[in-house]
Amino acid sequence: MSVWIDQRAEKVLDEQMEAVIRAVVADSLCYEGFSEPAEVSVSIVTEEEIRSINRQFRGIDRVTDVLSFPLLTFEAGEVYERNEDGEVLLGDIIICLQRAEEQAASYGHSLKREIAFLTAHSMLHLLGYDHMEKEEEKIMFEKQEEILQKAGIPRQ
Image 1: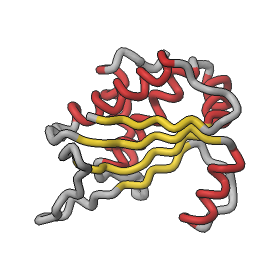
Image 2: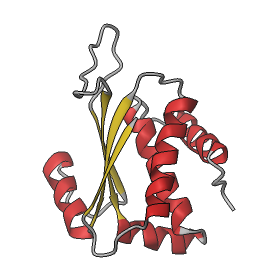
Image 3: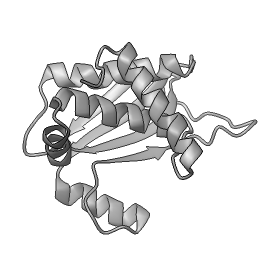
Image 4: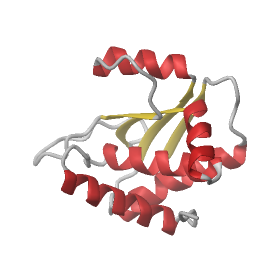
């Protein structure tokens, strides 16, 4: 499994936080039974950058906490695109560090918990889940919490 972390925010996450991201990616894949070797790209960005990406790709001109860009549809017969190492390209996760810090403070938990939550949330999007309907949202949020429990980062 390859997790590429590109840090483009003013503040840089330390190696321990990068390890949390990698662990949650791995735990998400394991939880969902995705046994293929996989590649995920994670970018840590500024508010300005995530707003620009959100506007460009979703037509929404505002800052958000996280964006997910899955490369798979999980439709029957889909052929997985692979990198040169044979890993399935799952997609991209973009996390706004400033928004994650604000949400951690607002929810009264650590930045580690918030980054782990955003990573688990995005991994489920990369693995084919969505939360557009109430029932989908319930399923997705239950899965997020179970992944974070497994990772040892429960809600406080």
